[in-house]
Length: 305
Image (cartoon, rainbow, N blue to C red; front, side):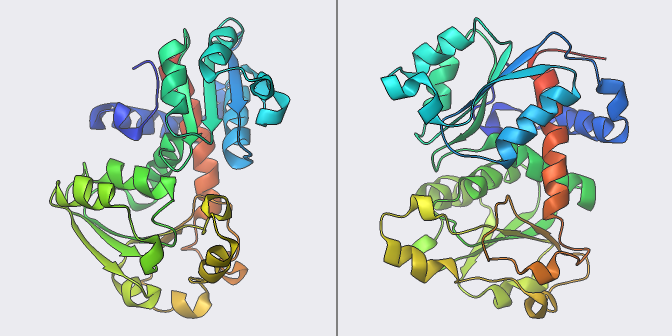
């Protein structure tokens, strides 16, 4: 395993090993504090990001490594017209591993084909976001104790939400998973996911418009924001952005063990009044993101304790 471009680049067995390593890092971070001394992570972010970029950088520093890179396309040679392929060829001379986020779908794959070092896709357009998926899987497994026999509600922007697409692709490999897809008509799951994955794999799913109709039967609710940057039309965005707001009243409809996840950033789709509800685990999820990226960096660099 040299690169991670899609969550499916890892088999279920490889994934289990990665999540076990992440849980061990969570239990005893000091044990891993120097394993990447002398190693460098190139952080190549052509698109704005807070959590993903900083959690990659925190992960490498927690392992004793160093970080170099850029946080927006405007501060890179992309402004001069340099291709992603040329950039990664040059960066391969300076770093041991690279994390790349890019607005164009397929950019990370292009980079991996030209790279001499492992490449991690940190999000490419509306396509894939594998390290968010690994974060989600670690969060679910750590807090629920399993990745099978779950009913999962996915709510909000299911059309453009790359986190949702990647999570569905990863979870259909586990037994007895049911999806309830909660979205307005305009933001329903794309047909390549509906036909090419859910129907093809005979996964039970249903599509609803009202969040209230789904809440009582869920083990997990995965909320997403309506992404302004994916809309061509401001009026459409304004009409959609407040379609779902999870508040204390709606949470009364949910079971005592239902967990609320969100890839963050949130805008207003989760009311701050539920931040202290023990079922709200989205900030814990952000912490799990650091552990899983630490485990991934170690795995791709073939570092074992």
